[in-house]
Length: 610
Ligand code: ZN
Image (cartoon, rainbow, N blue to C red; front, top):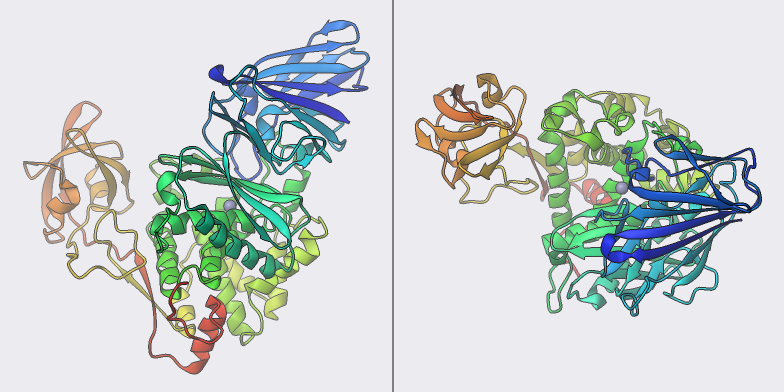
């Protein structure tokens, strides 16, 4: 048994004090370390950089800890119980590390709990202490960790079966609000931290439908005391991270529903999609896990080509579940799907990097995106979701509607997740071929190892959906729906992403093969004038949209502090915006296939949300 205690000792200085007591440590040399990354977020974060002090004692008093690399300490020759006390700085308002001030505290175990080498499989005991003084007199504690003496929502003792479990139950402490519901016979709570005025009844009702949908999908909710959506509400923010019996969410105040509002607004739909995504992970990635993640001790990167299945398939089902549980209509779903597909079509990086490569290189590319990302990489989330969609429709077609990707997920749950067996590389592809009754090797070669676009047009037709591509009306155009009647189709494009800045417009991305790149403009340039006219509030788009392609315009731009002149030959805008619509004229088979896919078995795709 390893004993831990955590106390928000100096909230104003954002310091947690964390104790770790080890009975019978390795007297010769006991190693202790903090993880370099947190499961679910594939970037080396070096949590040890926030350790501001660390001391150790044994039976004989002070004993020295020697640091042997960036994250590991060693203690030589200790006898009796070893006690280590450290102070950890916590001031990162994200779902991935830790945060503490006088209003609340939040931490992931990866940021604060030392791994005792050689003792990782022992049970852990954790005492969560309140802040000293008056600050925390109304604070409560929210965590999905097993209570071991602590009261409901209380400070006190908790326990975990091993170190891996200890660091998989994030903890929130403060004056949060709760909305609660039951799903699959288990209590579910949304823990709301931060100022908000949310319609809690509605949020509970809507989330209950999503959770019940996912539980029914997999056939059971894994064993847990309760499930928590730990939600930090801020002015503007977005993020989520999955855990075995909870998820951490960061959302904007405006994403939450307010009393009296009936419609599912775009931002509320995004929030429900985020909750749906993290909840689906309860099965897919937290329990149906890549074998390499099960072997990882979090001390260095863990490489897999499977993130398309864990993030892509999850991204596919997150919004589809909103449609299938009738929180949004099929038309609304197709709009959201079209927006997600637009994000794939907008990046030429999809011709450079395969989805397998995107997954493998997540550590150095997807999580370290720069101004060249659109030209160089593809997302295993968005293209992974597109592969999942194409796979689902393909299996449905190959099996005349008898099977689907849903069956693949259920088999993965039964054969791997429920049995705690890691999924080997290419294991998902194997199960998919089995369900389809034919080898899908060619499909996966094309979709995951290759870089050509997927033939979604033909697939969609079989399901009564029209896929079209059109040019973007502006940089704000996120796609998914036809252009509005009063939109003017731009005649020309510079091939850039930009933002209005002081004195002009700053180029954020210069797309490969675009007019701007061919003329020599670069990301970071501040465009100040077009043909001698200052770039005003209307922006660059407006200044060139009426000019015919092939025309040369003279652009003045600052690169750093030097004014430069570029003669830009304008190009036709790309047709990179996806629009999906329900086809009216479809045969009965297509209608039935569409109904089965979208969760409208009667084929009545045009329904009201309710
Ligand atoms: Zn995810």
